[in-house]
Image (tube, helix red, strand yellow):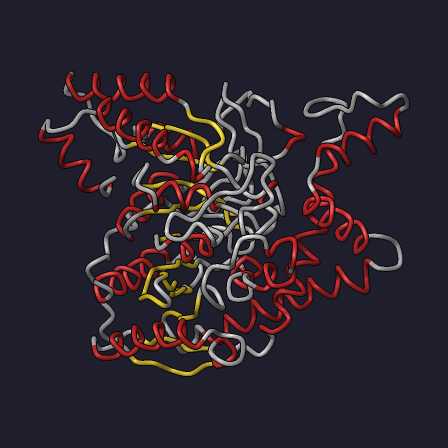
Length: 472
């Protein structure tokens, strides 16, 4: 599948139609079924939307920025009349009664949604192995995980079924699978994109964002979906902008912060070599590298797993077997209905995180854990604020090493948790971040994460675009 820009040229010249692109995407999804990237494939709906796009073009009507472009979306975003499962047994047959704001905007721009992608159950995981519908395979090496929780969306792009896709990022769930599969993944500033219609994991951390085969594709997608939403009072009042406006700006004169805490122990030497080589190229392009310190960053993973699980235990309490979702057939009393429906409906990882979250919120532990984690969150945010007084952008690895081998979620869950060590801090602080391929190690792509100032996605994307050019 080509980039958005390539497909737009084909549509404009008449070389392709929206219907032919949709059919090509659906055929590619069918031929890559072994990767298990999709939970639901929307054949009839996609072809109907493609026909509408072709009709608009034929009638000379104004066209949206994504008119006729096939797109995939993570299966934790509601799309009216389609299944929204969050990759969980508890919502296996749930049909969304409304459409998420981000998807409304996507379709308003003319995009053709071809399917709902597989994911870690309730977005809880970093390997895409916790899905009720089975694991997603990494197309680059099927013995390794594709990352998570948005692994299906990353693989949908990496395997060429669509040029771009939407995922959600709570602790690295867009950036980490992007690094694992060699595509581009952007987590916007918290509040840049509406969360209305996104089934919640941790409400103060979740953010919807784009995957693309190129940085420009991510910029195009972000421009289409961002903006204020009266249905989500955490959305920013900042106006929508063209995030691709600065893609050719380069890095001359930019000051790049290099956190000493991110480039020491724990980082794979081959991954570090690829990142160092790219940073050297940046320096040759006129950027200045400046060592900085983020003194409280070592507490990020600990505080993240307290805050995220606490919010999850609260958010997931609504799945009780009463109003919608899975209901145990064995229940005879009200307590049994709750206990059996939840224990049968939720997978092991989700149960683990609900239990941990309930524990840290319980009497006697709330102050000792949850309150302390929120204080650490503020310290980490302050570290970034201080760093951005002297640098324009911050560079870091996206992951501490290459994609993990399949099966480690069962054998070594702590290693899977630590794969988010460089990404969770951005969710705690609400900052934008993007993972861009910057080289290879052991025959697999290495992701370089760029961290930007709040709401400065256009500048962040310009640095990412420079990385992309230098990586060719």
